[in-house]
Length: 115
Image 1 (cartoon, rainbow, N blue to C red):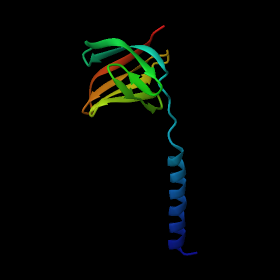
Image 2: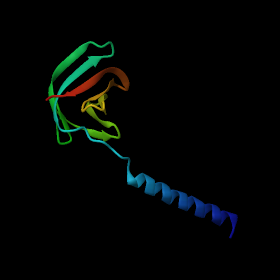
Image 3: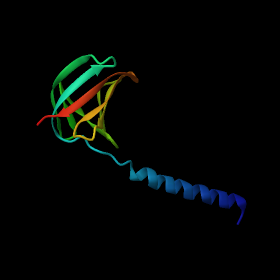
Image 4: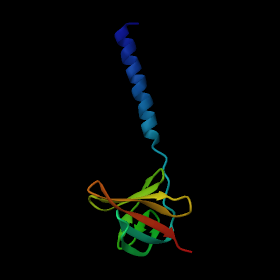
């Protein structure tokens, strides 16, 4: 067996293994359905918006209806291009995380379960 053939075979095997790993996908968690109090703050802690919202299916419903993209720790929502909020489980039924505008952290969001 030539060195060149052995090298090409190793590359094919490695590529196949990588495809299997990538194809399996990343484990994800969901943001639990229900009613929440949503609090959005600036990075300095000033409350910008506090209102009742909900998670219905895979959507966050606040002022509009926004699809939640699952992550290993909860999910994230893109309100509009460049404005993303990340919702990480707080371990107590709620979610909290940074709010980004153009990739820069500008504040945070907290979802506190109601009831």
